[in-house]
Image 1 (cartoon, rainbow, N blue to C red):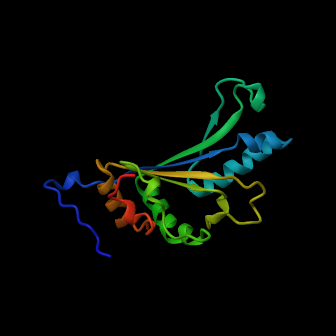
Image 2 (cartoon, rainbow, N blue to C red; image 1 turned 45 degrees about the vertical axis):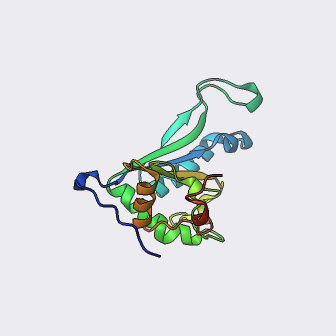
Length: 178
């Protein structure tokens, strides 16, 4: 497989990674447990070890009785990584995390948008920073890598140069319209 090279007149026009955003929803976990403060502290500590910095706690804006949700209740955590931390996270993702995913055959092209790549993980234990003994409450998370690319092809080329592998079965339908 040959790599595409993107030639630009200006070297500053070359796409680059702007940030990596890590998200997790904890509303369901909070409703299932009695000791919500302890669970929030455990999930925050584990999420902090994944991102390398303290996460921002997202709270609900209004109460919804059918979801047992009250205004001000913590429902999610978010971390935005930039610069060196973003590069380190992508390196760990490519070299350690994705090979640990069960039956990994590449990332689907549907995860790729014009300037970002979104990955979802059902359990956080695929990350090597998390020890199984410390993981009392399993939670899922989403990682979004945002770039400065203007087209989907430029974005794909950038992510492939970072070492992210895309699914081979999607290659045949790349240029066709459904």
